[in-house]
Length: 225
Image (tube, rainbow, N blue to C red; front, side, top):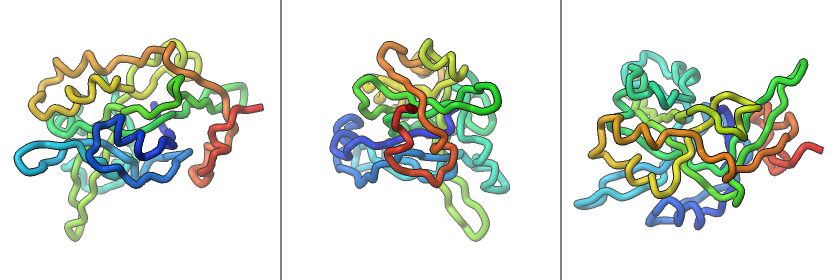
């Protein structure tokens, strides 16, 4: 499971990493939580071709057939191994894939009577794309909500002692295939959805500040003394 992450990278670096034509407006985020707006990269029509755009979607996918938006609170993650088959995700897996922009994530390890949070990032501390799915839901009074879910996979050697799952971090070379609308069957996509190499990542314990979404500052990622 992935329940919190960060996005602190400069907007110019994010634009370069994800091939955006425009530099987005980004404020540093140290404790992104479910139900909040998250930055995603997806394809959008532009004249006679598709281009990548950065959009803000609610974290917690609301299926188009849902009767209430609250279902999204339970669908913040989707298992990469089964998302293409699950009723809540299969339509989005075929037609609405995106990348959630992040540069770190948190997981918790149960230690005696409490859970110890850990922060995971790439060794170069750069931004990365998490494989994700997005959906459109229309509620009462024609309320339109665009929402997303993060794909998770089996944890690598670094994450496994803390948690058995981790977000699917894609290599930049795989962004194009993941976003390609011409690919609808899961066959060509499933090989992308493995665990990220542990040797390319770093991790350390942090304080329990991140347990509350109200804490949103650099202290969240400071190593625990």
